[in-house]
Length: 161
Picture 1 (cartoon, rainbow, N blue to C red):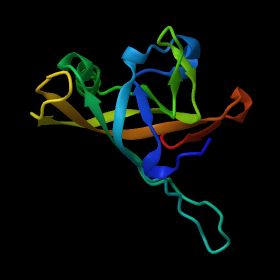
Picture 2: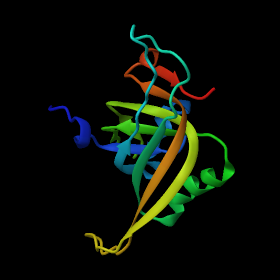
Picture 3: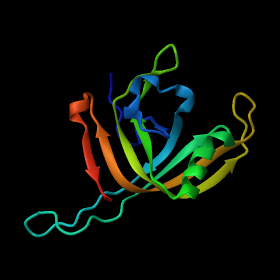
Picture 4: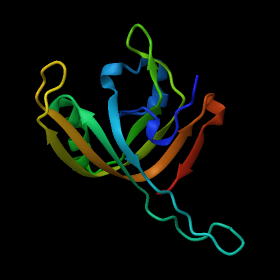
């Protein structure tokens, strides 16, 4: 089986910490990611050693929302001024019970929602649905936990203490 890279990866976001209960992630709670972008930058000196404070990390992602109900969590988190977890899973598959079966890799991002923007499309899909919502979300990242195949391979990077 060929591996998918970069723009070919299929990604889902779950607005919770996936690591709390990885076997009970339902497909209906996963939002399909259309776009995903962030930069993690550390200052380095001539000896390639990290120094000073880290640069702020802004993670931007766009999700396809089938119902305005699914976008409520992002708006609720925007107005609360608190940090929340968001799990990104790449090349995830689901079992016959519509629960998460497997994934290639992923990350759990803890951060503050700083911006939410809606874009509407009125194109008709195969089922005759006429409205699709794309939600652009920006997070100020506190920490990222990169998920490996086994839990001992997880790597956590902290940006805001």
